[in-house]
Length: 171
Image 1 (cartoon, rainbow, N blue to C red):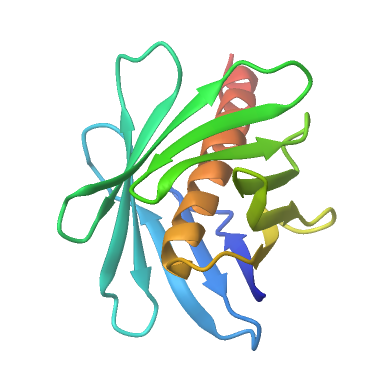
Image 2: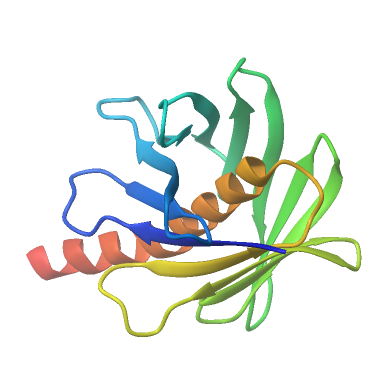
């Protein structure tokens, strides 16, 4: 099992994430593109800034829908939020098959599943400045792909809540 820590930069005009490995070394970074039409986040290796995956929000859909593209621009996953009672549920259609992400009601814990097999666990840290998660990867596929899905989950469930709160204070 491989562990990572995901930390979101708090005071930033756009979404920025840093992913640290078990040795607390910066392994990956994710950042929203400035001035892009729509909503786009790129995941890169921290050392050489080599782009690995891109998350894009699909507009004009009834349910929140996002796609994950590899560095060549090919779609490798599509996520759609599903209606669920007292929990969060997201379906993930990947090139590896159909997966799902199950989350708690408050969106503080998520599990990435392939059928009955757990691929990744994501737990929000309770007392931290900004969003901070512990991520445990148990799957056999590309770790950067799993981490991209975890960044997508945080931005999908927590960025919208903070944006709603900040806009409601302005009124």
